Length: 417
Image 1 (cartoon, rainbow, N blue to C red):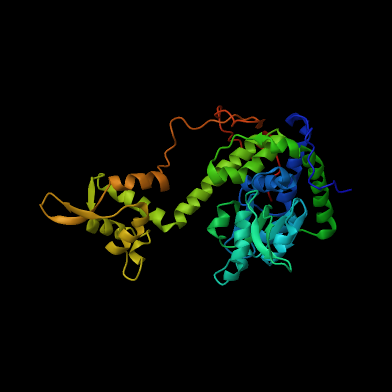
Image 2: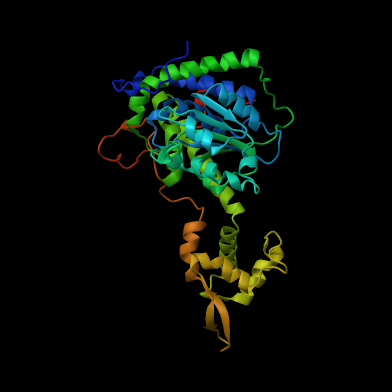
């Protein structure tokens, strides 16, 4: 029998140790997911496992992380992963296209887990009419962000809940506002020799449904406990909001999972930062300008002419092909304007005046948008321990060492195939 998923929480739940075989159950779920789909890394497999489990404690969560399943082409396993999620998450709602009106009406106090395939067709360049759906998915990342609409024959303003976990699969990156609220799984085509078990309803669905029911039986009574947890996080800001539900599940499970969850969180968050740096033109420009200054011996100023010449000489950079004839002084000033950086007239040793950039103007932008990747002498330290229930005050500053054991650690978990 499927456990009651009405959303009621047992606020009399015992301590975290009462979770029993939660760690072993997550191990089973991780192995089951890994046999049907090849994830891009062991950390990604850990993240998907925890995201599935977190869907069963939605009523206890402050944030509903999105799962962005993206790939460069078709045939990367995106839809297959959604098939597996459909049979394991709490109350799935699968769709390849839907209207905001439908989603508004199915989200309530016990919301479904939204599974959206072909999301690139919803948010593509010709999908302007879907802005309401994008707004709903953005707002639904955080609790108590309703959408107001005129509804009913009396045309009364009505607040519709938006809070619900959602997995979205598509070709290419989703809009930045959604990617920023998501655990991002960057799928790739399978290499020769990478084998998976065919997904067949007659045996795959009963197996995965049995795991779903056991997850629900374990986690639903712990919703009250989960609501009081404030876990130590290896990331900050929105990344911490997005990953916190996954880390809460890991701390409820115990065993190797608290360390595995934090290691996956740290590694995947770093990967997305690097991805953003590679794809953001302005960040690339800041990084390249820093290199030009360094190669010139970090002078106080550089002539605009000299700076442009150095940028254009880099064959691997996009600047020679920028615009119609390559990056020029106007383009450079325009790209740097948002960072409050602008050229000014300076007099050089030859007593000649020329437009130039002052190095000190870049220091703040370099620190904020492309910080030095050299590790700190004393990095943050985190205890390899479950979260504590904290009421009335934030947790104490972290101490200990950041767990870096690979998912599975010494337990020898099955690898994704």
